[in-house]
Length: 506
Figure 1 (spheres, helix red, strand yellow):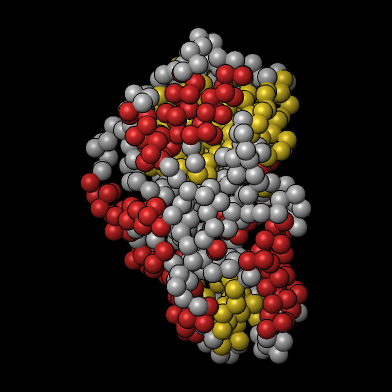
Figure 2 (spheres, helix red, strand yellow; figure 1 turned 60 degrees about the vertical axis):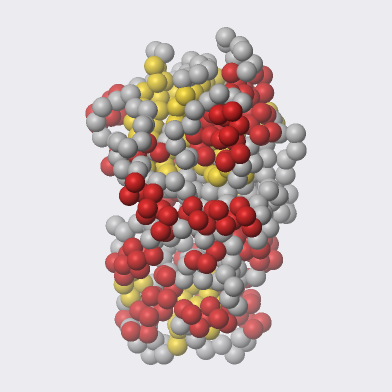
C-alpha cells in the first residue's frame, strides 16, 4: 500500500505534488519522494519519514519543472533504507523515473530475466526497481530516438505480458511526458483528472480521487484494468487499453480500511460502502442476537466510525465516542514489530470511563488482523467499568496473507488463521464476536457499481486472482516478511550501505 501521483501542468508542479502526497499520507508513512523535470534535467528529493519531514523549503526550491511524479511508501518487503525510497530512476532509454504501488508476484523470476537476457543490473530487493527496468527494457528494444504514444503503449503492453501481481504505476519519461497504468485485474487503484488553468488544461494521476479534489482537479475516471494514460509534456492526453486480457477485480480491502472515506474508487463511494458495512452488521445482529442487550456502540477510531454510526442507527442503539485517539501516533497496522505495535496501541487510544461504566458495550473495528489492537482495547473497556464487551468487525476474518501490496506478512501472525470465530473471540477476550460475512462485504461495495461483481478478496478466502500464488510462494513470502527477517535486514542495510541515486544535497 503506497500512494502515487503524477502531474503534467503549465506551471511548476512541486507544491501540487507536495500537497497531493500530504493528502495521500495515510497510504504510506515510511518514506516520500518527488521527481520533477525541467530543461533536460530530472530534479529529485526523497528520503525516509513523513512528507513534512522529507521536504523543506530548500528542497522545494530545487524541484522545478511543469511535470513530475511523487510517492509515499510503506514497505511490504525489503528494508527501510533511504535508497529504497521512490521514485526510482534509470538513465536508459531517455531517462525514466517511476513510482509504484503494489507487489509483483513474479519479481524473483523477472530479476533473473533482467540480468541474463535484458543485461540490466538491479541494486535493491525492491520489485519496483524490477518493474521500472522491465518497462525501460520494453521501451528501449523499440529503438526509437523519439518515442510516440504508440511506442509508450507498446512498452506498457510488454510490462503486462511479463509482470504478474498487483500494480499501479506513474512514470515520467524525460522530455516526453507522464504515463500511468494499472495491472490487468485492476487490483491497485489509480484515477486521473483534469484542471483548467489560464495557460490551458492540466492533468493529474493519483491513487485516490481525494488527491484530485484537494488540488481542484475534476475526476475524469479510473484508469481501467490493463489501461494506460499517457500525458505528453505538450498537454496532449492519450488513453489506451494495453493488456490482451483484463478483468475488473479491485482490492476490497481499500473499501474496508486503506482508502480515505471521501475517495471514489472504481466508481464506488468509499464512504457509502462503509455505511452499508455497518447496516449489514446490524442486520446480522438482529438475525443472530434478536434479544441483544447492547447499551452503546463505540467505534475504534478512525476507520470504523462510519460503519459504527450506521450500525447504531439501524439497531436504534446509542452511538458514543468512547475512545480518544492520539493523532501523533502512526498506524499500528503498518508498524514493524509486534512489541512496537503493542506499545503504540497504549499510547494511541484512551477510554472515556463514563461511556463504559456499567454498560454492555459493542466495540466496532474495520477489521481484525493480528488482534493486538482489539485485545488491548477490550482490556481498556473492562478496566473502564464495562459490564460486557462485544466486538464487531466490518470485515470477515483475515486468514491469509496479501501478496498484492498489503503488509500482512505471515499467516501465523494473523489471529484468525487456523482459528474459528469462537476461538478468536476467546483469544481477544470478548463476550461475543461478530464478523461481517464475505458475501455481505462484497455486496456493500458492488452496490456502488453493479458493473463490478468480483473483487480481490484473497485475505479472506485465499483466492489469489493472478493464479500464480502457491504454498511455496507463500512460505517464501512469510520468511522474507516476518518481523524477525525485517529486523535482521534493517540491521544490515543501514543508511549509505546501499547505493541510492540522488541528484540533490540535503
